[in-house]
View 1 (cartoon, one colour):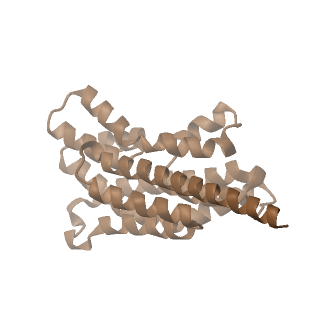
View 2 (view 1 turned 90 degrees about the vertical axis):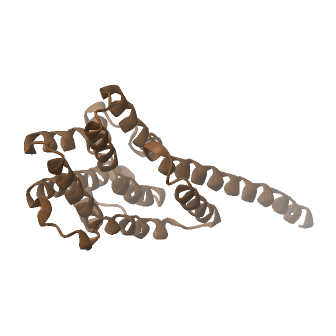
View 3 (view 1 turned 120 degrees about the vertical axis):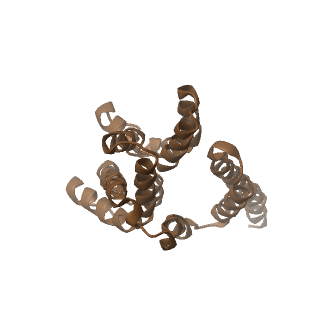
Length: 244
């Protein structure tokens, strides 16, 4: 649907992404607990969280810090883990690329998996129009606050969080809630299945490359299926024209 104003689009974006924060809260709690457990001060832990805004990269870098790895190793590792955001930004560029830098740069920093998935569904359906930016801003800012508050809570709750809660299980569930409504055709289904299988098979690759492998493989599979469907559609169209 087209929102009549930027304010309404922003509010709707925030409301739409709010249920998905349930998936990042457990991860944020774990990140906060881990940061304090390895000896970081609260100021260092929250400063690191604000700088990274990437739970997976932050967790891996903290592990590298414990192993006394070189700083350049930490930087390169974080960059490799976050390579998926290059694909995300390329996908959003047709809708948000016209914005001035004062808008693009803060929103690029706040880009998250959940915001990207939700906005891609909306933008792909053509339901945002001129209100794409405020809608995205609503999702991004809500996720940013949700993540940082979760890490902050984890820092102060510490060992008070029972291990048998299995908090990490909520994270994949939130992504499944985004994935299933987005599968609208055979190409998307093929991309989802291929990406999922590859990600599982490559789960033991270092530096979280299994996720990137699954993403690239899913994209290639989806494009291949779509291309094949178009090739089959052309002869059928010619056959119908000749018959008429």
